[in-house]
Length: 215
Image (cartoon, rainbow, N blue to C red):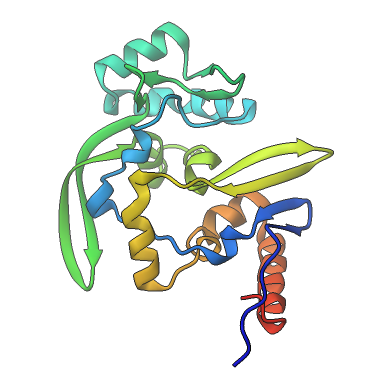
């Protein structure tokens, strides 16, 4: 059996540049272990666009009672978003950590056919309201795509990179266990962001790379 060829570090699908790690690295969120720490850890909120800020502002009344008093105070004072030190628009945060739209509750999960109750999970009030049919906006696409990070590089070209983080080490282990690669785990948000036809083109690229011995 011939050895796999070495993938170039960057691939292009349509107007999107992808780190080849998105096709090769395995990942699957494990909330039973991390309990949503990606919404807490870090030094800034989640990246958002102006359009998303407008959508989020329309959701505030619907999620207000799910938010902590501290989060409500931050929103009253500075709004749902701010510009961070790098000049990016991000969701407002509480005490330099939690996104203002987080709340803590037990989460019911199914794992290996068993119903599990995971206490003290950090959850998203925006997503909760959306799934309950109270709003039309789920959550920022940057949250849905994580651990993929998106950056506009100019001329309509978007770059996607895999953001490695110690908080997600068990997600890597679970991805290896389930043999699930990043582009597969994030199929739904990738389609939400770039469209069904783009994702099908991505799958065609993956199939061709496999045929050529790169994957």
